[in-house]
Amino acid sequence: MGVMHMSDLSFYRGKRVLVTGHTGFKGSWLCQILLNAGAKVTGYALMPPTTPSIFELCEMDKRLNSVIGDIADLEKLKEVFEETQPEIVLHLAAQPIVRESYKDPVGTYQTNVMGTVNICECVRLFPCVKSFLNVTTDKVYHNNEWEYGYRENDPLDGHDPYSNSKSCSELVTHSYINSFYQDMNLAVSTARAGNVIGGGDFAADRIIPDSVRAALKGEKIIVRNPFSTRPYQHVLEPLMVYLMIAQKQYEDKKYAGFYNVGPDDRDCVTTGTLADLFCDAWGGGMSWENQYDGGPHEANFLKLDCSRVKSIFGWKPRWTVRDAVKKTIEWTKVYQVQGNLTECMNRQIEEFIKGEM
Image 1: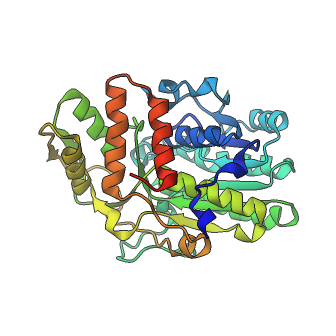
Image 2 (image 1 turned 180 degrees about the vertical axis):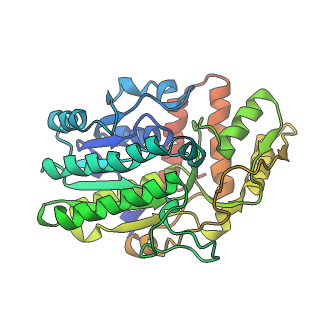
């Protein structure tokens, strides 16, 4: 099963790949991996969701076919499929922030549900697509706050508008599979991933970006919810799994399915522990303080059972949460001195693929 560890991305050379949400944090890293592999990449997304953004810092629009458009705009999406004839579609476009979903539930559903309907519809209409992956979240499960991890066949029923809209996105995908895709030469999967960290995430309301902002200003980190446990993993971890699933199901439909992607239990840590790891790795006497603000409901404990992706693909996580924090800081320190960020990303991708630190 050596090949399963994604050291070999040669499959993607010359492949036409459409990535939705390519201007975001995960999307930018994904496009970088694909570009390095020699894929013909088209991205479809709104303008980058943050300023600064990794997408703009790395001038990614110069290196791929970047289309700025709303996933809720079906006609525009169809035009892009028509023009680019993608063989592989990786759907990452989403409104990803729980707190934001409380502020704008309608917009969140519009993007996360109708956006998925529109992508599914284009995949149905364009037979060029052979492999389609919808990326959702670990928060799609009905959360019982129990101690063991959720498995792929557990009930889907997210609590807040973000989590719930992603449960709906899964269900939309299931319906398209059952109603249309089974008779097509097409393989479809969904991947449910945990919390990702890595260089270039500038989102609001996320512990690592908050820590980075504080560190760059030389201030204390404010931690909102220090006792909640989350499955943190480096951004390259799930991205490599997405590429592996998309490739394997392209080659053989039997690999299509629903997959959890998350870290091992030892890397499910509390936000406070993550802040500790960050302060240690940053150095210079960085510290944090607890400022629980009684904000809107967020799950206290959520953990995935990832044994399925492990047994089917022989996959296992590469970097621990400590490694992931180290890599994030490495990138941030290059950013701090306005160094070459693309080079830094390429080095980290290379190290990840080779299984180095």
